[in-house]
Length: 362
Image (tube, rainbow, N blue to C red; front, side):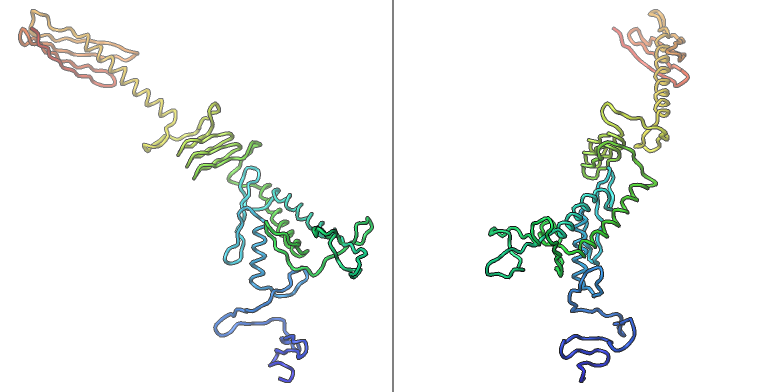
């Protein structure tokens, strides 16, 4: 207690610095207890730099994650566990979740910011009533400070011990070298990831187009191919220049630029598409039935009817139509002088046709 401590924890009586295990060996501090691991709270913000060995607190990590998300853009956000949700960029007509060539411009601006900070100059003039080495505004407008002088050979000035500046779309804070270093590291890693994605692509989806980017405008729509546009809800546009502008449709072309769909299997369900073979087969069956029916009808019409002075007549008839033949058998009877009946049946290769009729005359 005379040294201001208990056990291996001591506090200097003058500087008030608290030391843990300063006079013992060991390189690991275990905070776990019988109930499991413990949370260390009340920590001040540690220094963040490439050479810092300070512990950082949760707010610093969250701020770093938030600044990274802001720097990435593309809808990147910070999750509750401190991780950063991947951004979404449109690169070369494809959507990727990495930073690629689109970040090149940002990287250039970050580099320019670093250069601007290094090139800030200080100018100390002859100031009456002030210290010769004091920093002053360039004018009474208080809108500019030049450090180091404006001459070509003026001594360059380095600003040190800066606090981390706010990094946001509206921030006007100066940033530290450590902040830029950290951002450049992340940009470099993401840039390489996107380059790999652009070079390797997907093994299961590929497009080759120099046209405009595809546009999926309608709710629930999808567009694949250069210049493909799906503007209607739940519409799908597939192929270069395809336009899907009607709800719940799939388009593989546009007006004047139609495409064929090949290798289509025979449809089975009522809502399945049919192929040309099925279509032609159905049309052939329809034509056969129609032509055979026409031949049967003609054959029935060729059966002679009972004469006026006769009571019963049985006859046959035959006919052909577009290559289909039919034969018919008919019976006509005069029941009374005023009532006449007629029955007939026509037989063809496709179907049998029957008919009956009656007439009352006076």
